Image (cartoon, rainbow over all chains, first blue to last red; front, top):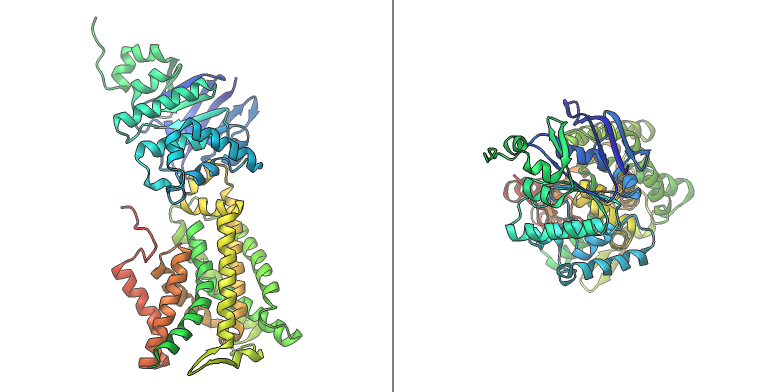
Length: 241
Length: 290
């Protein structure tokens, strides 16, 4: 098992638990999608695994070792990478510098430069704009830069929060093509995606969250076809056949 | 009014102000700390330089090798012990105002206890000498202070622009969460940046020891001036602090010439009000998202 959450609870400040005794398992090499209504705690789960938020109780295991409460830099060193939902580029830095910041933990600068060349050949649009401040890119290009920056550290497990949020349909298509590419690279992925159908289409397995608890889980295609879930979480009435 | 002379005096003094303000704006930019104790930290270093000068005859410039590292370490210790308790607060910046206000009061009291309220100043020979350029003169002390400030600000620029820790400081300053997600230990970087800010206060204190007379309660006047400089430049912008310092120092020189020296400090306070009314984000700052 790559990742294992066991009865984990967490919340912000002195507030109530947003994640409530959650347990879930993630196997290596697969792609997962987490769906649920607004306020279900999906982004909080990612922050919890990514070290932005510490668990109040329960344990988080990665490759069999406890990682709950570790800092993001310590988790990155173990291969856990979070691409957050909030605008998280260094907007005043150039595209190139943003990418090099992605390899901040890589002590060998020549390795970082080699990876930068690889990234530029994977994403030519970034190579074309390498000197441009990241804040001047379009929304879709910024999302591509975020994903590319995360790849600079070669993560084993990547969590992506709302990758298509606020993007035009064409840009969102491009982002999902990249996610499919990440999948083919063998990176274990955990997505939170507002476009549920899209998220389920790209993933192998899905977790359905509500009020910080896991309500269902199963193969993504089955979840997508389940009329109860379509009604409850996708706002669509079950089709009568 | 001798315009070239006023410009020269304003620019050399502005260079020193820029050094003083850069530490305040660095801390705000990286950690959203509004450091009201920066003035008293400068005074602490000025008293250190005064002590080294009177006891061992250390030139104020030589005292930089003592004041900068000692203030760097002192700053890191203070940050490590006092600020983590505020982290996680929704009103972090406001809390730092209160914390540093209290810190300034405590340090002012200690300085008053050990050094009394007597006006102090070091008196190296160059402090009262000038370079003559035809009808114009440049006070040597202010010129040397400005040159030292430029060198230190260039060193700060090199630290931020060309080193790994400097990139981490810039990243933390632009987006704290994003910096965390790329592996920056923002807590350690913040402590280091606080140390750098205090080292700059240390350098400013050494220069201040011969450029101005000082006494423990004077730091309130200094912090008001420094706040006006960084608000004009844009809170958090080092480039803005430098431009703000040069602009206001020159303006204060002209006001002093036109209306008398007592009106010179008023330039900074009035500028603070006017900037906040007209362009609260300053020259190089960014508008707050609503």
